Every structure is written in structure tokens, then in C-alpha cells.
Image (cartoon, rainbow, N blue to C red):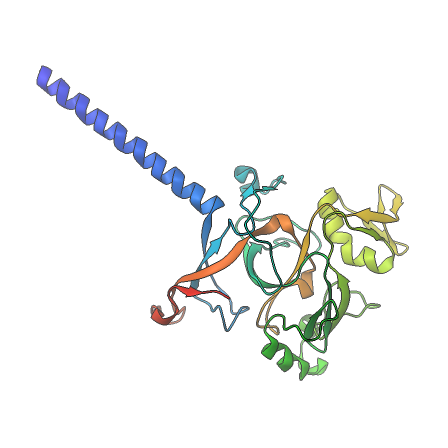
Length: 295
């Protein structure tokens, strides 16, 4: 009887230890996935030819700084305060970045949905002034600097308006006076934290959504300016950095040309490596893409 109790006690202790160490392992993996490195599957062709449907990529979340926020509130769709640990590098032009799709439910409102991610190339960073001239991205009037997929941009330059559907041709902010489109766009100044702008008609249209996101309230556009609680806003000072993101497949990509600027809080990390790749049609492993660096 005593021997049986000793066996039961030892068995219970072993099971307790297994549960304890398993919990540590699971918790460590969870922390690793949330704050250090993430794995994502690519479902669309918007980043071809470098990244293709069926690629499984690893994302370095430490590069730009790991984010700290209430994950449970974020999953439930509640507004969260995001704090970021300092990273070891800053986002640069032409970096390939993974982020939360800023308009998961409506084109008119910026939100953070934990289930919806995009991968795009960063064309413009805070402080840049961006233009698209005949399909070619130009930042800070530097026509020599190649941004995005230049080959695709040149191909777009040869396409006429009549060859594209209206929904593809017209671009942010969808204003008939500005008349911006994917071939001719801007100039668009990309705000950095602390920048102060005068809210004339153009700036009110360009920055309305991100000001609403920062303030957490709806603003009315009326009489060529923004109104908050029946009071006109004449100027605004930004609280965050913003970015302009675009797909490498320029004729088939939902990106900043259509929905505007991306807030820094929504950035997940830097695309790093293709860990595996599976052909979505045949189901076959594409061995030549495994462990390929993303650039």
C-alpha cells in the first residue's frame, strides 16, 4: 500500500513537472511569435516577382522595435495604446514591411485588425514628399533614385487611362478637383511626429483619416476644412510617424495609392526570409525558394 502511494506520488510529480515545463515552452513560443519573429503565408500576387502566392515568410519584429499592447483587447477589436521597444534600425525607402491592413472594415476609417495583414514595399518615409509621375515613384524630387518595382512602373507608364478600369485608375483621396490617379499622383507630404500643417482644402482631404485616427473621433469636412464638435480646425500637429506603402505589382495591388498613409502603430516588422514555399495550385513544395532572403 505504501509502495503504491509512493509510485502515485512520483507519477504525480512527474506529470506536474511535465505540465510546468510544457507551459514554459508554450509561453516562450507565444512570446517569441508576438514580439520577436512571426510567420505569415502570402495569399496574393501583389508583391511579385520577389514574393509569390504560397510563400511562407518570416518577419523580424525586433528590427523596427517590438510592439507592446493589450493583445486581448486588440483581438476583440478594441482601441489599444501601442508602445514600441526601440529597434536596431529604422524603416528605409524600399524596405519590405508587414503591417496590419489599416482599413479592414471601411475605406473611411483606420483600425487595427489582428487577423488582417499586408506586405508591401515602403516607398515613402516620414518627412518625404512623394509624387507619381507617369507611373514612376519620385521622392523629394530625386528622379535618379529607383523606388519600388521600376520595371512594372515603366510598364504602367505605357498604359492609357482607357485601358484600366475606373476603380483601378483613380487614386486616393478620390477627389475630383485633385484628380489623382495611379499614373499621376501628388505631391503628398508624409508627416512625421511633431509636424504641424495648415488645414486648407487639400491638406484636410489628405490627412482627414489619420487625424481622425489620432483623435479617435469623426471629423466633418465642410467649407473646405475639417470641423470637430462644430468648430473648424485651422492647423494640426501630428502625434505619429506615417509611411507610404506600395505593391511591386503596381497594376494589381491595394496600397497607399488607394487608401492613403499608414500609421506607425500598425507596422509589425521587416520581411526577412522565405522559410518555405508551396505552389497553391499543385500543392508541391518549391525547393528553390526555401530560405531565400527577402529584399
